[in-house]
Image (tube, rainbow, N blue to C red; front, side):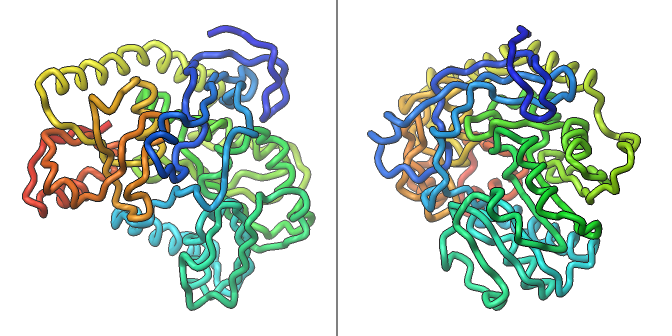
Length: 396
């Protein structure tokens, strides 16, 4: 790792340590790309991950916010997967039961197409306001429509007059570069309402580092947290951290926080990682990254040499990061499969694979399927078997 003079976006300390660099990667992974030419000429940027030795926060210090796009073309929903839907509905019910979210006012920051806040309002008879520039009206017709308001914009200081009993932010903080300023804005919006509950869900950096999951590092994700660094960020900005936990095979990290009363910071929760532990995880990633990358490169090269037909299952961010980091071309992998019908006929940013439906495989009959997320292995295996296919299956 090398030291750089770069202020930490979480705690403001002056020095960070660079440990991972990738050049010329697509700046958006899930924009709907309508032609192969557009995909192959997609705007690129650089990833330079650095860790703060004071708070343990990890940031892409070469991230340029102006390069990313969050519009109606941003298609990140996982809601076409039965596995994900089961998880999502269970999470909504758990939050409703855990925090008695019934007949309450809810804000969701980064609501995407509105599916989760819609569930919270339907299942708990709540009132909701969702913020997201990628929101598309009408995607989720709902019996709670009269109790839902969507604002197709980034949440910012100008919206701090919106008040709620429960503030939810799922899979959004990792897209925000200046995380300290952002959490400070959320705290100001709550003002003196000490009963307000704040719930965030983000990717779990421990999973990325310890599994050497280089396919989970992509341009839009400019911020990475372990339990410890996430808790320290919230405490530094006027919150009391009540709980930290992981779900979805430890891929997602959750935090419950409430406004603090101005007392000194509480003792860390038992399973918060120290900064030293985070630095050990970073070192583990550094020591094992090249071997993990070479392992996958060798495996794919062997498939190509044997003339085997290989498809990727997962036409989203993991797939884009996997292909671009390994430098895979259309000669190696011709297609990516995705169950989201809105993606059908679009192309993978950077490498140009066409995104096809699962039914396409009945004709194509691949020899090998590389699944981008192991959580979906059972679901995908069942789908393949139902189509009479029995390829060799690999998971990241």
